[in-house]
Length: 289
Image 1 (cartoon, rainbow, N blue to C red):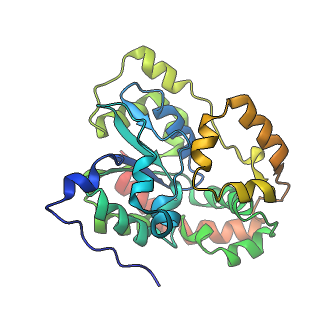
Image 2 (cartoon, helix red, strand yellow):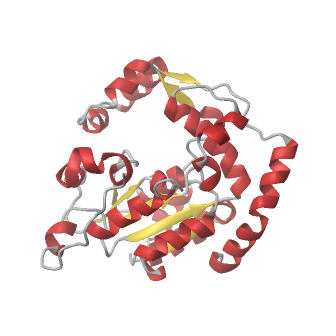
């Protein structure tokens, strides 16, 4: 049963929002959000949660509480725009719940929703779900077991839900193919949306130089020990405190590469392409500028 989140207390909004992010990258999964978040870290006016995904509003809301979430941003310097990115917030099976929770605690938040071709996204999302669940499931069976893989490509439905809680002026839609063609132009749009002063060309060049991250061929899944360690409340803090070479070495030991066929059969691709053709065309018409 979904927990009903009460509206924020207007007499205590300053406390509710104090120390919380002012902007969030909410989705969509496998649409370039990891690279975008890593890029935004390079801007001197932004403090992005270093681990990117907190999963607070979807997974940890009831178990860890708002003060745990607030503590994740304790190292943000005064005056910085504080951000986090959890693309699972816009997954179809939980988007209503997560948007209600974000609106209850950070009603003025600015949200960034990044999308890509819906069928290509489905293929990449499948590999991520295999990684997250640490179980090899053939693609066709996975689409039935995890219907949110397909549902999370229904961008008009997802955006309609987001707009029930946040007005359009607080939501920016980005397209991965635009980002691939001209990163600097997209970065300028993001900075304008976030009401940050335009960066110098040196900063924009550094942002544009951020390499692509989380490529499908590099996906891996946690071995049982790492999966167990991730359940610790202090895992993220410890992980961030460790030297990067230790983290990289630990991943090599505690994760294993995913070797699955991740390409849709021609008939399945044709079916899904037809299924999303009208909604994808409408979404691009409504939100591509």
